[in-house]
Image (spheres, rainbow, N blue to C red):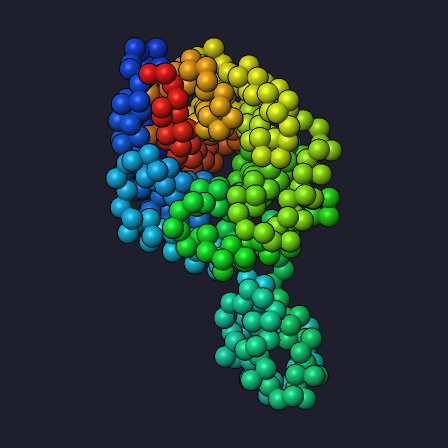
Length: 406
């Protein structure tokens, strides 16, 4: 029902948000807590519905369902730990199901590459059909008991070839790069199963495998197909997210360290694009972790100067303010202590609190981000950005608590 109402009233809601942004409203911590309290039920309902209806983590729903609720929990909001544990486990299983290196299908037994396999060997392989394996060692451990020693010698390479699922950067590997980055950053310091060594080690292995020789990670999914930025800008942003996610782990790992160093070297050679505010915010966070104080100060000022006249941020230069970019901006600025000037957060809070809808959400028009003008596609993407923007608004507002001078 929420999605039907949203599709029908999006344009009207956008007008309402614009009018309300000029209304006087308190912007103190109590007002922020009230706004977040109204948003959390929306984020839960729509996030859980996405799990059930779409069976897909996606970069814009499940990671931000978890991030928003964990941030709220850290700020003293009552969040049901059983629900968090259920969402974590669902996410873990979905990620594992989408980072398979080996899975034999009935179809594979009929491929030309399988022509050399005797029917007796094909029959012996049937217990492996559709069973997922993350590693070659795991696959071979289950294959060896099924075949004789001679059959293994003769047909091992062929069976591996037809069973291997290529790990391509455009696949939903582990849920997708754009999902794993925020997911892992949000899980650090918690009791989540997503930070346990088994899951963490698998993520490091996966990201190491799909990192390109130049040190970058290529974007996919929403970051490439639904945004109107250039591929270099998208790839840089994806690489920064991924490097920060890897850096959030606090245990030594040679693969992790090597991947991060390659990503830093790649990023240092790229052409900046501060006109894209998501790139700018992520570059500021990236330099805070890997760069110099001088570079952080320069980028922080660039992000402050990128504000629109209403005290909020749009995704690109010349684009109206939106909740997604504003939430991301104040989250990053809080991390680099730009909130020492409390007027920054006060103005952003004023815009966000005034434009919040009655259901606790923020309407975030896809047309401000996306590369399509097709009305039907825009309606679908409006629903996605509606959720994404609401989650970022909540995460950003939570980060400002105690830092606005009010």
